[in-house]
Image (cartoon, rainbow, N blue to C red; front, side, top):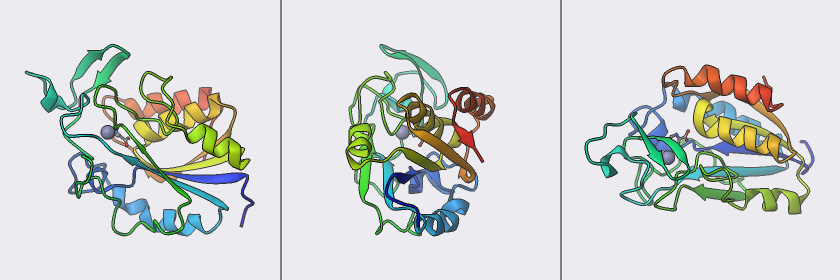
Length: 201
Ligand code: VGL
Ligand code: ZN
């Protein structure tokens, strides 16, 4: 068991990101046993949960004439439009039934503001509105983060690069992540994480 200066951050292992879900990531559920096992090694454990109100601005269905996986320009920059997913209180928003949620110290929900999406566990997609996780980790004395979960190229990558930018020592366990890989997004995300000083194993 590592000491409590090192946290495991488990990103968005929710039904909608697993096979059969609204925004299914190939093999998204395959990482669950390995993630559960890894929890036992950490003294601090945080889960994140994508948590959108119905009609969220990141949903293609909220934009007339737009299709899922298209783009739209938001006040904070370009935004991918997604199928409706992780609607607050829905089955799709619930954690995968096999994920061990009992040992979690904190569940951080993100994407709950109707007008802004939030991939990162630290900041919404304007890269400046905080979720509060930074303060939580700092006040607990956490300095090192290991990240696992879904999806490698969106929520994991944004969380990892933000974490590194904030001064945390960040490792991404790529074997315990799975990607959406939209138009080469996985390759770009891996480059951006490496450039930010994230260790990818
Ligand atoms: C995610 C797209 C939209 C993720 C969340 O968890 O990677 N991707 N919302
Ligand atoms: Zn989302």
